[in-house]
Amino acid sequence: METTAVIDKLHPLERKVIPHIKEGLSFDEIANVSELSKVEIMRALQWLENKGVVKLEEITGEFIVLGTNGKKYLKKGLPERRFLNAIDDEVQLSKLSELTDLSKEEINITIGVLRKRAAIQIEKQEKELLIKLTDQGRALKEKEFIEERFLRGHFPFNPKDLGDEEKFAYKELIGRKDIVVKEIVKTKIIHLTELGRRLQKEKIDTDYIERLTPAILKAGLWKNRKFRGYDVEINVTKISGGKKHFVSQAVEHIKRIWLDLGFKEMKGNIVQTSFWDLDSLFVPQDHPARDMQDTFYIKDPKYGKLPKKLYPKVKATHENGWKTGSRGWQYKWSEDIAKENMLRTHTTVLSAQTLANLKEEDLPAKFFSVKRVFRNETLNWNHLFELTQVEGIVIDPDANFKHLIGYLKNFFAKLGFPDVRVRPAHFPYTEPSAEVDVWHPGKKQWVELGGSGVFRPEVVQPLMGKPIPVLAWGIGMERSIMEYFDIKDIRLLYKNDIKQLRETKTYLKL
Image (cartoon, rainbow, N blue to C red):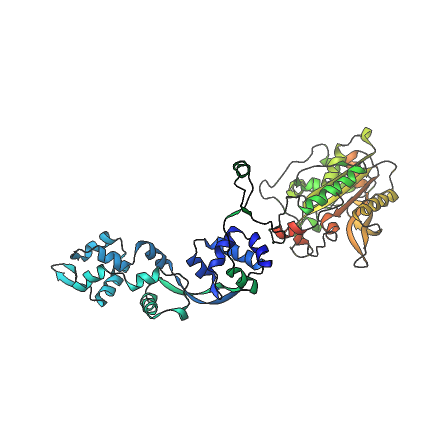
């Protein structure tokens, strides 16, 4: 009963391969005796192994294979064959290349081979060498060479399996350039299982209906015919449907959190002037963050434009505090430094541009962004030079630091981190400033995920005309989502490995 059930489920390729299988036969030997391609045979053998009919053993060893010239001569003929075919009785050496399409090197080798077999004689005639065919050469011309039979053999050959004639041919050819070579080759040996041996004793019918079509039904061809059984146990290729990159899924989820809280999304350019990225945020021009070791500057065009009405206020704020009540940084502010183009180092640049364009009647207002930023970092398991920052600001005359903590707790709770704490910190453009930590239940410790604070008057007053409370935060998205996707190395977020993309779970919070 078992063999009948297996036979009913056999694929047409399996039915064609089974009669050729013998114990200990190699994959290449089956390819030589069947009319199937190697791909078809391999598929059939793998399916038969899945059914327990055969067991495949991979053997690595040194085998004789055709070299580059061997493959060419298999198609065109050995040089000595083409040489003999070009000579009726005698020929001048200078004309051989034209008559045979052989290279000079091949002609020289062929002359040596044929002289060794007494097939030709060479005579000097005036200034020309004349090659004459001997009686032995005429006889060879009508016979097949042992080497020709060898080249038509079923490669690869195991040197141990060569017969006397094959050993002679191999010895003749191995000394010539790249006709046959020895290589380390992996081959598969087929062993029949008990089920396989029983199957071979059965009559395996090849006249099965694979698919039931309207034409078969209409013509009644299905009558008295066998249908191939549907094998529900067979291993089939896993189909992976298309889906968004898991990081893109996380971005959409984070955006949805802020949109649901009534925030509007900020947008802006990746390339910014130092003025917008740093000066407008009251970052001094001698701050270490401006060094090329920390920032990517643009070579061409090197400089951008300054906003005519705004930059004098920012300049005065840096130099002496302007009207903010601050003393500023007490240095001479440089327009050239402020004009330098760079890849934005944070999305807070978008917050500065948003504040500069806000009108008083728009207040209160809430904005966010989830955008790429760039830092001149050394790439390692914990750092990227291109990352995604989650930015948020709230502009409200009645806002205070407690509101900031409330927004952060609300956001992180929706990300799966209900326990949030803030610690005092320092940032050039916020005061008070705070680091944001979340409790990691797996690591049993607090993990820092971002910075926050209230924008200083030196930032807000030049941009908006008067000091208004602006709550602000910036969070690294990658570190926030790594735990959800069980990723320990931050570089794996953007590896774009197909296997990883297929197996990584969907961001279920979307």
